[in-house]
Image 1 (cartoon, rainbow, N blue to C red):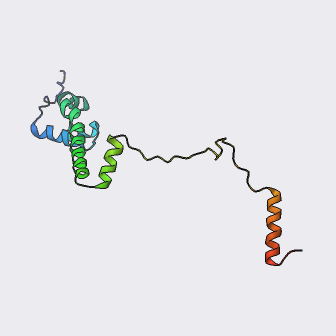
Image 2: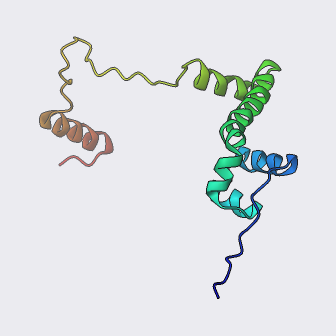
Image 3: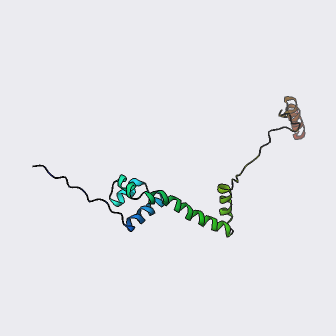
Length: 131
């Protein structure tokens, strides 16, 4: 006598499960965790919820992008700057000029040993400690 293997009935998506998948995908829940929430296999999730998985992130980005855009339009300076950096190619840049005044790229001579000795003598004279 062979035992019959008990199989699960085929998965049937509902509006509620589609909304659950969309919500979890929008907030970044992994497919493995989303499948566990629905008590289905990841392959089943991908088979029945392909559109929700593919479009949810785009919908979330559009929602957040729209809110950011509206904040920028209403005068939020931080939102304006963020938008311009990420969407208009603005960037913060600090130019450092490594060229010397005579354009030779040769650094100016610093204090020489003779200058340092002379400065020390002047200091001693001023302080009244010269020998």
